[in-house]
Image (tube, rainbow, N blue to C red):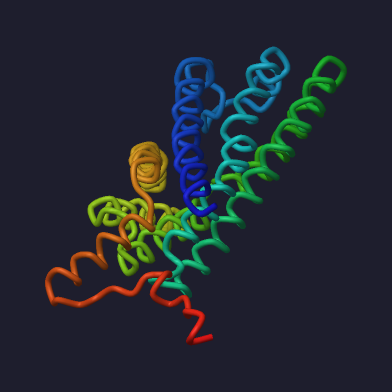
Length: 254
């Protein structure tokens, strides 16, 4: 069962990476060039764009929020199982933040898609009112889904820290995760004046982190690592490693 969960976690990590790739691809090919999300964009123009491209926006929000959040749940649980033996408190805390992050992004995607329909319907009758609804919608979706990345950053940081202590993942991958996690956490501090850079480090870094993590989880499992660890000590120090058969009482002992 545990190996099955690790494989599911590996697949979930690769899908999470893919959602980021699709999200960035749509952002830079269809959304950003059209002026959507621009800081100086006219809210009425944004409402018009949303009304004219409702299907694209629906796919974008569904991919980057709902699909990502659903697979994040699987990955968070798999990583908890992987690290709980070596670092139980840290692994449990990380899992909690992972599930919280998943809930926030799923909620953000659901609100975004419902709001998109409302704005599109309003725009044909009341463009100014549609623009007002879009502004309110943008604040809610951004606040829940990643205007700052403190929850996601905390999860990546704690997962990497727990794995460093438990030894369940490559150390270089863990250090990479620490850097990404810290970048995400720092996006909560506007005074730094580099929120876009930190957000880009977090978002783009997660693509590589998720992909690397998924490959590692699909190619290895904690039980195999544990067997190698026991075998090493048995050979190195002449220790006899107890097995399940050794611990089963014989008829004379029962």
